[in-house]
Image 1 (cartoon, rainbow, N blue to C red):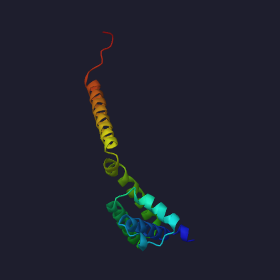
Image 2: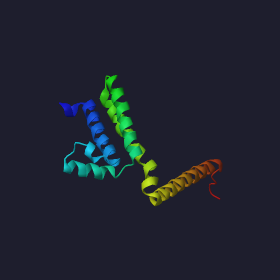
Image 3: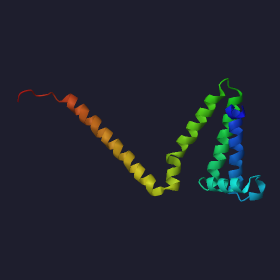
Length: 134
């Protein structure tokens, strides 16, 4: 039954992220992890900055508080998932893959230009009367 409770899930994530944070800060002996769990946690911690891990823990805490007052706690869990996944997209890309982030920005600019060009040509077509049989 615990696996179905959103509160239990949040608590479990908080504990795991706390371990990632402690490992990131060099406090291996402050975690109660098996050697296999420690290896996995170190691997996961390497993908995030300390600031990101702290932010995740903060989001989890806020979500947990919101769930207590809610008649539908699973909605808060779903919102958390959306927030965590959308944060990850561009904000972190520039830090992790600067060249890829530059390419992505260029693609966005090209899309904007194409959209603007497309909408201006459609507007122009509406303004110009069509000539039949000339």
